[in-house]
Image (cartoon, rainbow, N blue to C red; front, side, top):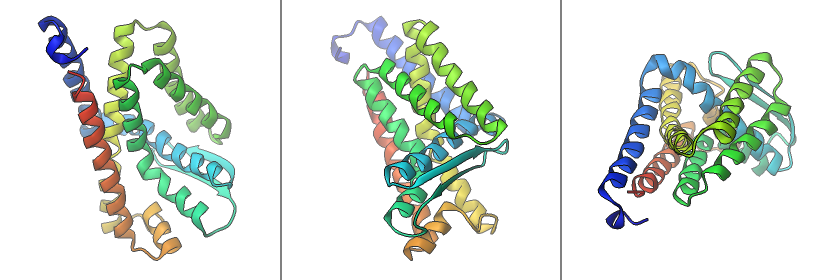
Length: 231
């Protein structure tokens, strides 16, 4: 319903949901104590992006590991160079932001249940390839939350959960790019995705970090505009 045709009470409710969930997601990303836990969800999306593009480009996916320090590793087999390897390496840092934008699109088209089921299928597919205990636990807990919301939550709770998830991916996709560059400045990430892409393509690693930043910022602006445009 267009905002100019909504009753004032309904419009106020929509505004509260939109801004309230945005604030909750912002705190989950910005507050270090929360981020140490919530970043695991971003790692799942990051490694899922690597895995998805490895499969799509014809590489053989060997396994995925998620670690308690929120790092992860996706191993695939195939040609050590070429477009498939480039796309696989590139996908990690942009995956959370692109998934967040996709979630925003589904929310604004009244497809929240579809969004939840896509997330569940994505997590189930990842679970098959997880190769360590912490990784299994992370994916099972995250998937369980989606299943609970999908089957047992009220429509209003599903709406709130969907908004929080979309905002979190959009905001949470930005912070790791900054963290990556900070680690590179400190020479703590010599084998980062950006450095691997530099070796694969000849484009400087800083250029790839900039690309990750542009994609994540564009997704945040675009996805945020969609979510805020709901009222």
